[in-house]
Figure (cartoon, protein in one colour):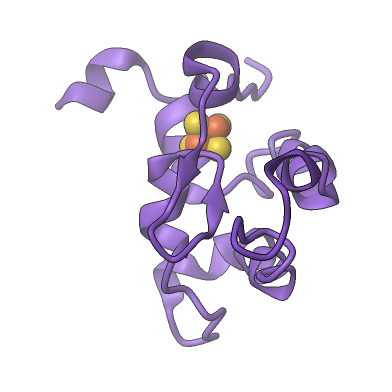
Length: 112
Ligand code: SF4
């Protein structure tokens, strides 16, 4: 079985999350994990996620609705390249994308 991610929020709900701090996230799953994430190397269970979240935080200001337009944010390379490219392999997907939107987990597993 080849690995596949279908972004539930992008393709299904066609929506995003704007956090009260202005940060724009692709979904609540990533927002909840990433909003306080600073890429600390000792947070073991988040290490596999680090490059996606670390890149996000590197562009933090550019991805903030108080500092940039939503149109520009949605066209930002984190949304158009970093995130979708991370879905190409299981090893590069974030834990959230793997857990909620990959073909490794079926809907029943999500609900339990
Ligand atoms: S977890 Fe990943 S694939 Fe799923 S909705 Fe969020 S960004 Fe999209």
